[in-house]
Image 1 (cartoon, rainbow, N blue to C red):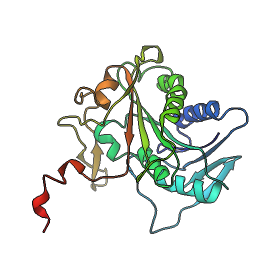
Image 2 (image 1 turned 135 degrees about the vertical axis):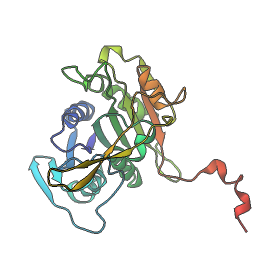
Image 3 (image 1 turned 30 degrees about the horizontal axis):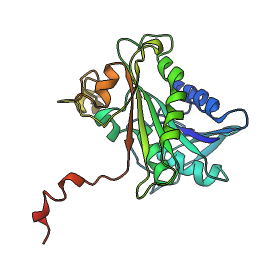
Image 4 (image 1 turned 90 degrees about the vertical axis):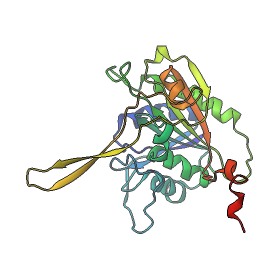
Length: 260
């Protein structure tokens, strides 16, 4: 296999090292793993691209490149500048923290997978949920490192070779537990944490200037039963198939009175 990997935590992030190991094992001894990742952290940038300005790309080592841009920029650079032919697979992550529920809408990790799917390449985003049971482990990514390869292999095997319309991409979230405590994998829809969202917090610098920090909500809040964060907090890996189609299909008939 030929695999392109990226992330949103930056090219030096420990989660990318975990993903490199997963991709190397998947590719096999005759395969190739290419890394094109942000030079700096790009968390929360979603699917943004640097449409109005150029961005620098630098080769750091064989098959390893840093891009001063977003994760989606990295995918575009990898597909159209770095690689001479398309990869078989794009992997994004392993993100430090979950991208379940509403987090998926902000995630640069998911943004890379969205761009990969729009470019016609099977793309999978992997995120490691953090919580009291794993944040103080010697390796908080232990569960992802142990179970990531097998989950990706099952996704590859199950994905249809041809798909009409927008292509599938996958949002994988690994639970906030040690590797031995992972109960299994569940195929589930995206959830919503009730009353949880981002907000701003004001602060003043020593020079008297006003600033705002954006802060997230409680990540240990359950979503509805059978959705991503709910199964994650119950010890399961969640796999959510997604498409870049934002249409509320269930409302097209209900809102028919809008049409003239």
